Image 1 (tube, helix red, strand yellow):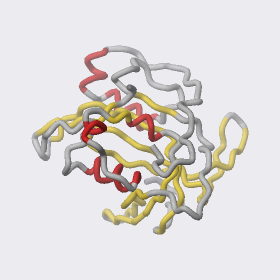
Image 2 (cartoon, helix red, strand yellow):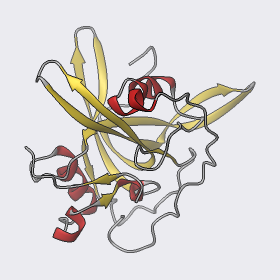
Image 3 (cartoon, helix red, strand yellow):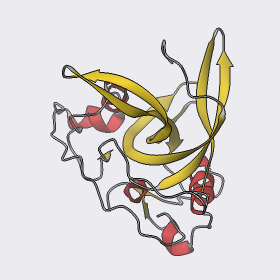
Length: 209
């Protein structure tokens, strides 16, 4: 396994944001953010980050002296738990269009999400003078829409299997991971070349992962 979720029994910047609508999305990155203490709730939680690209919405990015036209990306954080009340379990079951079996609840590898297509419902939240695009719901890909391959490299990080971050990890994600209890306990430097290939894309069956 790579990044395992279980039922443990326990309870933007200056750019045009993604508009409110429903879009085809492709998961291209899954990051284990580690455990962080939440002062508001007085508890520590193990968090993950799931990243999707939206092929319909494009952006030009300058990299290494070259301009590339790539899909815009959006991400969402979840507590690493498949408890019946957890947001992660609800989201994954909506994405699958199918409830988890008891066997799957013993340990579901989240790296199976890499390359999986879905439908993303985007809503806007206004905080002060800023407006943020957020993932409201994740559902199965409509049957009338062809599955696409991710244009970004499939990327993952898990404290279960990795001790260094992929080289292409965005700085803001790296900062969150390095502030985690797990990373602080490792006491290592981070620099790692990612092959960018990831696992094989899912087949043509009804369940995307």
